[in-house]
Amino acid sequence: MEPRNFRQLANNIVISYLIQVMVKNEPSTIVSGDGVQPKSSEVLQAIAEIRRNYTTELEQAFQSEKRKQDLLAELAMEEERGQELSKIVKELLPSPKVSAVPERQSRSRRVRILFYRMA
Image (tube, rainbow, N blue to C red):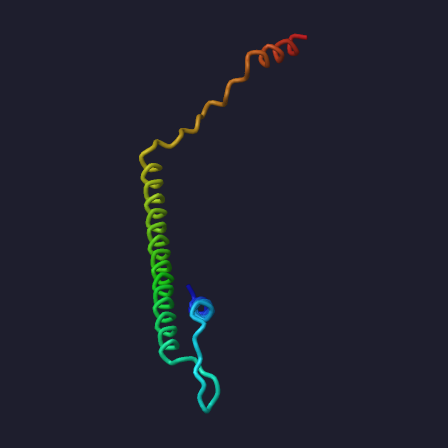
C-alpha cells in the first residue's frame, strides 16, 4: 500500500472515531471565563480511545499489506516452479518425428484419380 493510501486511511479512521466518540459521549461542558469547554477528562478519554482504535486499524492495514506481499512472493515462486516443471517435461518427452513419407491419399480419392486417368 502506498504511503498516500495509508494517510487517507488514517484520516478516515480518525474522522470516523471522532464522530463516534462525539455522538456517544456528548461531553458535558463547563463554563469558564473563555467560554464553554468540554471537561478535560472526557477529552483525554476520547483521545485515548481514538489512539487505540487508530493504532489497531493501522496495524491491521500493515498486516494486510504484509500478507499481500507474502502471497505475491509465494505466487511468483509457484509460477517459477511451474516453468521449471514444464521445461523438465519437454526434455523428458520424445519430440514428435517428422515423417519422411507423405500421407497416403484416401482410398476413394485414389479410385477417382484412377477412374479419370482411364477415361
